[in-house]
Image (tube, rainbow over all chains, first blue to last red; front, side, top):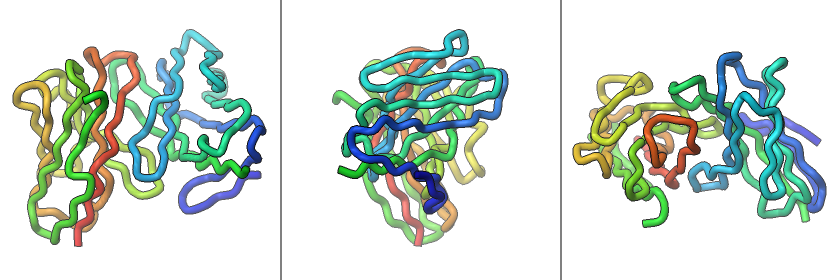
Length: 111
Length: 115
């Protein structure tokens, strides 16, 4: 289920489940989107990106879906593992402007 | 090295002191970015360099913040007369090309605590 923790919404899943992390972005002119994973004490780690001319992109165990109509981005993680536990951030960019990060979602994976 | 390297990893300073944070980007990366990350928040943009040129400093919160990249590789973020609200993690990121649709690669940051 989901709960609001210390400034962060939290998604708790069981190992092996599929996880879906959602992100609502604000700028309808954004044309590049990216997901990062951040573990405690570490910098953000690139997971997957997508350009606005696509609505789906797949990586290894991860899929990003983009719905420009409702300005929504999601990250799907298949067969979630305890090592996937981290904070996940989406970020958006318009043209050559800077990246704007969302607030993040904490994913907790129980063995 | 293989990744973005930042030093020190932790810095504690008294209010009013000056601090300098260092970033070694991935070798050959043209673009370098600095971000500030408060506890429980996403990174917020501070400034951007393309080689030695500082092309965007719109995110620097005050004139106490200054960044440089004199030779187009290593960058230093300096904060003068530190305040308690400067306490945060300062992240550096780099990309291989000029400011374009390429993923930014981040270092592990410097955690700054102002007492």
